[in-house]
Image (tube, rainbow, N blue to C red; front, top):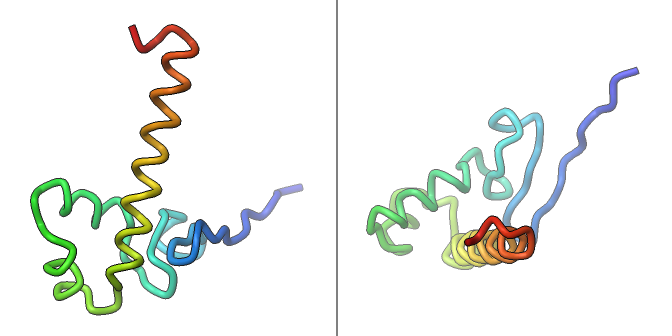
Length: 87
């Protein structure tokens, strides 16, 4: 028996839906992958530039993605330090 993966809402603006972009995390109501937006931010693009490029995104949605990325990094660092991998 195959178990179906269901849509998961991650916060207010982010979603993981196996029917959208092969299950990549996207901004709710769009097909814009969160990792692509974070990559553009890392390359120096501003949130305002990204909202102009993708008008279906909002500043709060992008900010939520940044917070989630930061929380994930902190959790990874904590886990690595606790397991001795951070040395």
